[in-house]
Length: 178
Image (tube, rainbow, N blue to C red; front, side, top):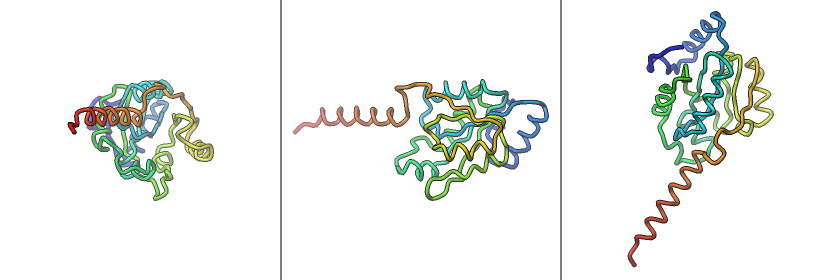
């Protein structure tokens, strides 16, 4: 585990693979999870904390801006740029390493390069994030797949954006003088 924030962000998969290999030699159980982490909120942090409980070293993959635009099919997302999302995650004490996930094809399919490079002991996900066929593919690269429940039922980035936008529009409309 590293405490230097800048050394927690490793976007070169080969370098990250070397670091993780060393952790495994030392007997550490390596956990990996991936997400967009746009507008970090309490559900994200509870989830990451539970992910860390699955092992000793937590690697958090951050979907690139371009990947999010492809699979969300929304040019308005992400709200927070990838560099800032990676930095915010690096400040979390339970996150050991952060990397960028940019291997998404034009249809939004994740190619799992990071998993083939690091072969985590545990991959943590929320069941509805990955269809069954993709979960089966993920399991080929890791020792175990742990599915967690959403950690804040009424909190999601999309809901936060929608509520904020709706409130702002209501405010604007209520202040229009005709």
